[in-house]
Length: 304
Image: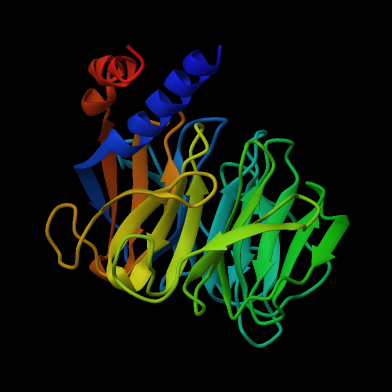
């Protein structure tokens, strides 16, 4: 039994490490920031910073519609950072103004206003929706993580030691991952706020960061971090072991200029990345050919 467990664990690790992401396509948008895929319809929702709009597209990037305006109040946006889609299709948007006027709003999939959190926040940078539909957000300047019911009743607020919180993601297993944009690391916690660990420091090597922002977690528990100022996406095990990266500085296919956020398609086989300063969304497909059963022969040989 122990050998079989070792085989399974090694195969999973080899699979995650061997998976490679390749450029597939792109579409143009003025200044894309937050991004998420709606589980209700599979559409891709993107925040456009300069135009103060939420735009949504088919999975291949065909434009479907938009809503929003510059300013405050219902449907008004000041600084669009985070987008998160709930299981019922609701679209949550964190409005990240850094003058105590940031707030979180939510809408129908077509953009009809549903509500707004009653409290205002300072630099509400990112939000995410857990599998149970609870809503989470990172309040950067107040160094808080907030947790609400889907309709905005506060469930918890805790204060990790961030320099400046950027992205946030809740894994299916319940752990909460938060990128420290200025501290150049990722911290992770239980849903109750108990620290579990951290990884990263300043630099451009494997597992190092320069302004990490968006965080998203795959169905297999792999954690993807948008390493903004290193112009790449890195991915890790759930505990922070480096698995791989893709991207480099530039304007060509698969290159980035200050990418911001990332989100998976419903099948998990495609990853969308907002390439902010290149004014586009790029999407990538995963090639798992390198991780198929041939690797098991090598593992089994160790136990002969």
